[in-house]
Amino acid sequence: MYVSTRLRAALEAATEDRIVYDLPGIEEQYDTLRRELPGVDVRFAMKACPLDEVLTTLARRGAGFDAASPHEITQALATGVPPGRIHYGNTIKSDRNIAEAHRLGVRDYATDSVEDVLALAALAPGARVFCRLATDGEGALWGLSHKFGCSPGDALRVLETARDTGLTPAGLSVHVGSQQMTAEAWRAALERMADVVAALARRGIHLDHVNLGGGLPALGYRDRYGRPLEPPLDKIFAVIREGMRRLRSASPTPLDFVIEPGRYLVADHGAVRAHVSRLSARGRGAGERRHWLYLSCGKFNGLYEMDALQYALVFPTHPDGDRVPAVVAGPTCDSDDAYSHELSPVRVPRAAASGDPVWVLSSGAYATSYTTQGFNGFSPLPCTWVRGGPDGPTGSGPEPEGVR
Image (cartoon, rainbow, N blue to C red; front, side, top):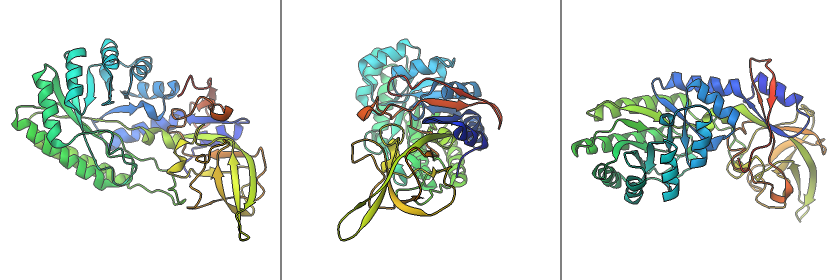
């Protein structure tokens, strides 16, 4: 189970529900990424954890930011990073949002359509654009294969239009899908980008960077059947490094590289301290009975991704003893607020009682950003964080502002 000594101590000390972040653990994860991909510029995908303390921690370490809206750009600037280390990574931008981002000083924009490029030329003159290529999303828990990205042929047209309208056709990007579990997905995406880089060069368009996108996986998840997910991170990094070499060979001019990790940096370094609402058993006909473990948080206040994975649960007051298979569910009056019922029940302490603490591990990604403002009256979790060394102090902050 992925929980540091710092994080465990903070969870043990907590007497009320909250999400706790291990800031030194996030720093260590950032440093690991820089060692694995030396020279690659890291732009944290803010949507994964838009908590000011996390953003500031990463900014001080040297990270920039992948922002998807003017609000995220403003929040990123508040960490002290210059606009040149922030890019507008959302291919979907209204005219108003483009104008506001340009006013805030952002000059690098993702795109995937000629229509978007024309809007950028009108409202963000002089901008640098990078075109996002589509992927099939195979091998990822969330494929991201429909809403974003264009074909290689469209990418040529998009970047030619950027050049012809006075913008700088600066780069290409790709996203292989969130929580990508295969190295092969990266290999295919990087090979496709190398072909497009070469095709652009033949048309007189010489890029200056490639954005490797997001998708790097966290380590502490279980799949919908309760099986530990074991992404081949060493192989993934090796394939990325190999792909970067191929891209440099395909380009007649030097290429820089950017990557947009999200959950990879924060998921395993955040955990929820929740509690048991009730453990109950109900008949289903023909003598069959099923246990249900209802937690104080669920899909709408911290565990939004529970439809695609299982989080590891720790019951600190019941380390031993008899366990029963149960469906784990959140507290709301919504049937989606539960792990998939028919797949794989979770074994939970038979003695679990209302009020018992439960630790939900590897829940640091999207716990705050996907939370509702208070569906059914269940409020967002307050956030706390751990600083310093193994025995460092715990700081605390207010509940997330708005929907964060």
